[in-house]
Length: 251
Image (tube, rainbow, N blue to C red):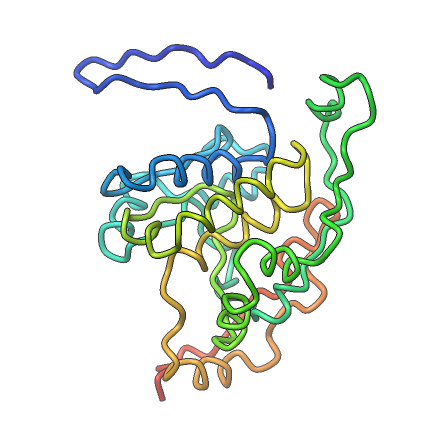
């Protein structure tokens, strides 16, 4: 960035509209902007994809990509689909109280940040000033965060690329999407963008049924990454369930 995207013309396809936005907030700002501005006219299903979705620079993560047809199947069946499956035996589920403590002190780039070059100065600070829970309370309100914590387990779709139905997006008020968009406009390389990456699945899927939680918690036991795994020197998977009992969690 900033690079003008090529104009695409696909035979038999509807017109492709390119929307130019400030280079802020990582991909989450663009997704929140689209949801807010098109809230009343969203398509039946919306797919959000980053340019690195199928060509990620880490081979171990490229191996986790889910093809579009499979994501569409899950969106149709479940209302939400993620373009990246969990690594190895890791789960999509996270211990909510541990996940919401997530913080990231820095996130490097190869050539510095766009805003620093644009301004000819130091980039805006990376840190959000609070852990993920504090950001959530500002964006969505304390009642919503408390509701997440009551469910104990929270799903995460890593990678920032996913799809969901119109109904799932509209289950959250338009004003909340606007709050996310506003909070992500602070800088281009910012901690809040990593918080939002960990939010999409939980915001756009129903919580784990209450009658399942106790059994699932027994199966999980202590198999939760409290300190986080090391990936690119970050606590990337903080709170993730590393293994669980495969018995019926409803018992």
